[in-house]
Image (cartoon, rainbow, N blue to C red):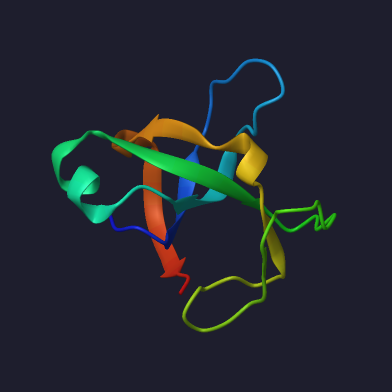
Amino acid sequence: MRQSEIWMSDLNPVTGSKQVGRRLIVILNGNLLNKSLQMVITAPLTSKVKNYQGNPILEPSQENGLKLGSELMVFHIRSISKDRLIEKIGKIK
């Protein structure tokens, strides 16, 4: 698990208005922390692009593995256990 990789994750269970279910996330924390912690800092992706100010939009590419244009929801940053990561999809630059 490395910084800027896109993974399918299982975000259940949650409470409140957090993103829920199986969804794509981007790993945000640096690689040194990834080696020593059992948690990763992530932000979820959504294909329901609303162009919120400050949210990067990712276009599909072979490198990132996305099938649709997606918005990185930086306002939903959270730490999750590495146990919630299911499959690596790709990476962003």
